[in-house]
Length: 382
Image 1 (cartoon, rainbow, N blue to C red):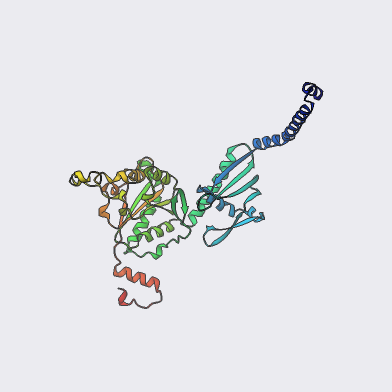
Image 2: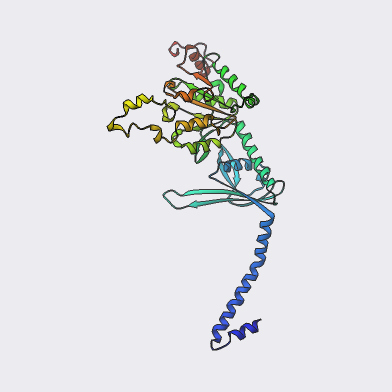
């Protein structure tokens, strides 16, 4: 073969032909050396599965929560310190790079971290990629379900607060209230707790009636009367996390998408709904006509056109075809009279509780909670 190539390239340009021949032989050598690597890569690709989760997905935190609870983590020699998973408590997570562990079968996990130097503030991106032997996705689904169960178990043990920023993010500085710390008028707190308990045991009844399995609560009254504290205490008592929604940050589509990501057994909180134009009462058509003047035609247009979330979009979230189940919708307001009546009807708001200024009995209860050893309550506190 070499003689044939040499004969074909022989002639006046013998030096050039010899150089070309060397290039061909070198290229063939490089290609032949790469064949074993390509065969090995093909074999690995055919016999392994990979699953990747990025830090812009809520599941990224769930995976780290699962990792810190595994016994094999103690055998990893390169670790990072993480204080975001358990607030003040420190956790050790795998450091950047590759790590091997055994979890019913061998796994290789890559913790990737990059620094984006573009822009004014560099942004660090992270991802976790798990690779294991096998060809069937059934094992990967079981692996993911195990991570989800771990997250749900941790969420049930501690009530957390989540806000939405591209995805639901846990607020690290949140400190939940205890139900015992909320002092209401006699019977109010007990009746509210009983109502939630009845709801949580009536799932089959909702199914039989063909009614969406969720319940709406409205806490209303002057500012500073403990509405938010009561929501926090109620969530802790029932082992539920709070997902706080600010309607000004959403459109109809993004709100529906965010609500779909809320897990069951959660509290969806619309705080100060009266301050958001979405929940305010619509003006009577005659009222619009009186406001409509040639000089103010543009200003008199329906303000819902300028809102991120429309009233109909909010109502669809509460009891539309795509409304979530196994959740509590809780709204707080300082002025119930400004809310649209469509928002207040049963099925959207099923339970109302007025929280007014503290009565004398509440003041005594609050004082004794702060000063349990006091023999009497000073008159200036009453």
